[in-house]
Image (cartoon, rainbow, N blue to C red; front, top):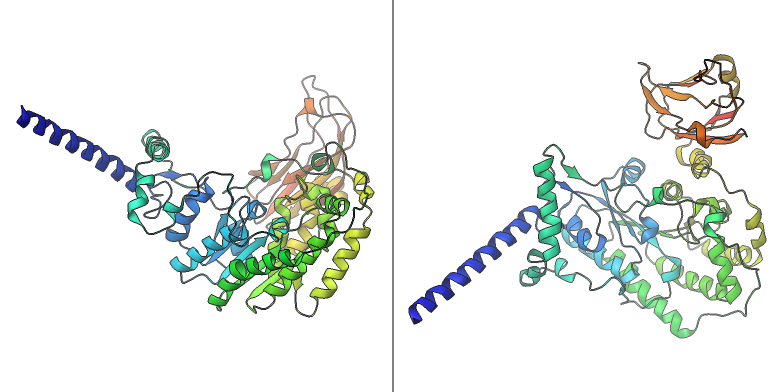
Length: 485
């Protein structure tokens, strides 16, 4: 009896051990969080969609020499734009709501694992300046430190994790079996990119309107708060810069909107906030390899709600503009100009006519704001195509690659008319076109935008004035103010 019991026990543990080996080996092979090795993109397709769990694997195993990092304020940055502007091979490491400490912790891991990194672009959120140096975001559950350390014993939380095994790893393999031609990985441009999920403008930022501006009693930094700022700056920004003297850290203060600033004016904390910013600036200017930028004096950014989906989160074109300006040295804060910058910032924030925001135009098409910034971003002036289009119904651009949008106004003069506008290559292949639906159009003048940001080389833009409807009568659509931005 004892012999049978022993055999059964041995068999049971052998079976369990075998199952654990197989399941653990399965997770190790697929490795959806890149904990052990690079993703096998020649065979599987990987979604990058979990910042806290996947960023460390990206840090350890991807090929890069530059990093974009920060909170959700950096989620709309595109590494393709970074690489084009800076000549780098970059990765994006966003941490939504992340503290200065959390972001620094991951940057330390970057330099521990990669000696080739020479460029870091880092957003510094305004609302996190007065935050304890050791603060971590705690509302997302337990921080997956077992993925970040080198202790193989606690890897059981990864390789024997039910979700990792039965959802992540299984789905990756199942997708491969059903569609073996699909392989690759989420691009860093698309990783955490939220631009297309939201609308922008005053009506979005302030759906119930803005409160009246009634300045509150002025509040200032305490000595304790000043020490908190200094300790955090030194531990979470300055220390790493000093350890990596050959790396350039391009830090920028994230530009929140004037709606956010109005709240601070009304509760009196605006003075404390700008004092805190000054303390932070003074600490960072001690390091020559920290290049600090701010765009809080750009009213065309922070006072135009067409750039925002809420009071803090700016659109993707502002992310692009920030990269361009950083490269060009615009908005750079130095030892010689920072005090004047602080004085000017305090003056226009406290004297700004916040009521004027209620009167600004809320663009029907959000990307019109992006079009207006393209001259500063790309260096090319807009082209007014109106007269030539009226004469010839087409306009040829030898190289359209630096332009991003065709903007025009149109009005239908007959019921079934619609704008038939197309961008063609030299073979008359349609590269982009206006896709407005007739039943969604009124008979008023409306603005239309065609995205040509992915079109390169020679392009012929055609405006045919309308099309034939079902009654075989000519329809008529009028165009005006046609520009290529």
